[in-house]
Length: 429
Image 1 (cartoon, rainbow, N blue to C red):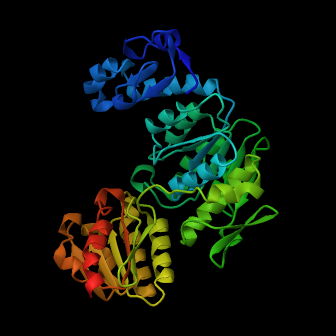
Image 2 (cartoon, rainbow, N blue to C red):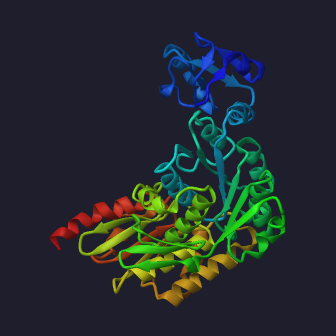
Image 3 (cartoon, rainbow, N blue to C red):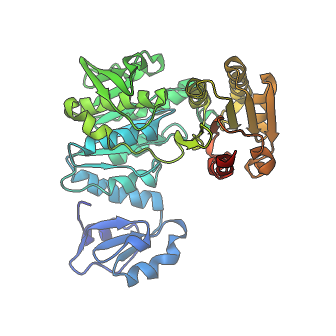
């Protein structure tokens, strides 16, 4: 972290401070007492107040904030003020974390880079990411979640992005914002926050973003999924006037489209496209986002259970249909949450897609997911994830191509591991 003087921290009046550093300088800020030591400041968030004494015993200073979100934001602003790094704000309806993971790998291979861990994209996670800036950092890759109008604007006040990357616009959090048009307005707050000279990286031909793209002091770069194509065992990308061929650690087309978005931002940062292959080899996606595990008997299971909305659900099912290559296809699906008054329509659209693709077995988990079964043949309904038991596992066969996907609240992320364990017996089949 870029060091802060203790007197500066005291001057913010953020809450109860204890254990000033011996030399008056804060060199790291943590929200986990186990990571804190001399020269560090432990900020006690939520139940972290129970570990203040532990942090003090480790030689760290401590802060019990009066308002934890405001405290982290204030500390992060101090650090951001001292950094000359380019800051990328990644927003959008789907693909934020994957795009963040990819861009972090691409940038990290060629310049000092800091990136958000996992999905630390809210009022706590974003400032904690900013607080990891080092004096030598040249690129900071942030992810910003959206759960209402104004949230991204507030996060941008802390991070002050120089590049805004919008991955996509589609139905998400409609219970909170009301319409896809407002989804676009909320995500466009990252573009609106750019200072003169900033760069907006956006999907090509997205009319809902047009109102935010008229500034003459911001450069607009667009990416088009048609500029992604398979190339034997790799992928080919067109980024501006440059054509690249990259080997990637995944085979899903929708993930490769996220790579194109990241490459466009990477190029906008002025980084060398000819070295993109170095970063591509270091890509590691966050868990539960298209994780593929081979199963005995020639099958596979895709764990895509971190979250779901109509765009990502469609992409996962199309990928299943493509990669199955003649194998029986099994879709284990839960609810797409927070779709408001349009929920029934969007779930019905997925049911129609399941029928259109001819998915052989659909297992729906949770009452809202029952809608998926309206137009399919072989199916099974489970009331919740805990109902996924041995009887359900017995319906799976060696050679099945399986996808598991739902909104996070459904809790399907553990099911692929159950399937893997069950499939061990297939060695003997």
